[in-house]
Amino acid sequence: MGAYFCREVLVFIFALAIVSYTGVAQDTAATLVPAIITFGDSAVDIGNNDYLPTIFKADYPPYGRDFANQKATGRFCNGKLATDITADTLGFTTYPPAYLSPQASGKNLLIGANFASAASGFDDKTAFLSHAIPLTQQLAYYKEYQSKLAAVAGSTKAASIIKEALYLVSFGSSDFVQNYYVNPYLNKFYTPDQYGSYLVDIYQSFIKDLYNLGARRIGVTSLPPLGCLPATRTLFGFHEPGCVSRINTDAQGFNKKINSATKQLEKQLPDLKIAVFDIFKPLYDVIASPSTNGFVEATRGCCGTGRIELTSLLCNPKSIGTCSNATEYVFWDSVHPSEAANQILADSLLIEGINLIS
Picture 1 (tube, rainbow, N blue to C red):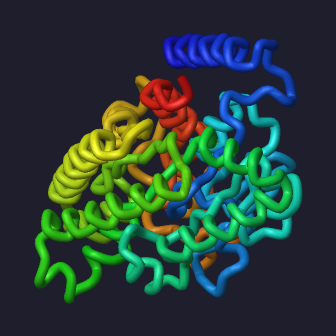
Picture 2: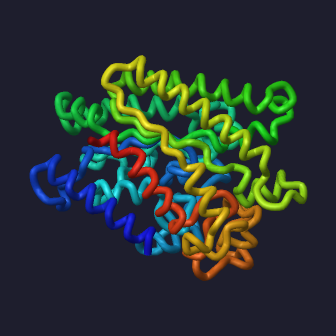
């Protein structure tokens, strides 16, 4: 009841904000920001990897079984991502398209675009390992998008959309879980703290690039509690009960660096509105006390055994043991939250990011 009430209050607040912003009550044309532009990894990929030669795809069942029309779109979830839910609350009736999809053309570009790619990271080498779209290429696609947008909307309107759009950035998890911890070259010569500093330097340069290209409202996600992901427990737990504490400590250390760097950027770049969305605490709290938040299972995912399933190799229509009701599970597969957990994360994002759209 408490979570439901909080969600209703959030929706009411944003409805009032939309009325204030547009002068009319929310309808199919009223959104609080004109566009949403997304960069990142599998937490926010809505289908770009469908068009890449990579095993990190989610365009097949049971992915998407609770999404619109029970369709697998490339989202690593049973249903909506946290960013989808955020878009819903901001008044969007359709989602900005995956940039590599055929839908990313013409007037569809007016509401933004999604450049995210599962298994990508701040470190381009992370993406290269999995044939994902590296950060530098996501930025190159964004520059290309700007030209296409100007052709559709005209240069003046395009510039306004670019300035007023909400930018979402979600990287870092793959850098650690799929690169640093399994790469002997990295973890032998660099401590997690040193590697985190390297990633934060890239982050700062990326935000400055976005700013120079016109972005003024940017939301950045922190790392989640990486040590609590079912796959992480399986691969790195070594019989440790509960979450892998050293990996959670690394994630928290990185999050402190991101927060500090973000404060510096805010001081350096005039008119920039930027916020770090803390997804560590809300997800950790749900994992630590699932029943309080309406969940039954927080140690494994719904798909298959839920302990190692990820990509078509393990989470597919033939996976044995897939649960019948994903709303009871914090995780959908061994890495990604279920739609029910994403709803909790989205509520947190909206609270922490309200200054970006005020």
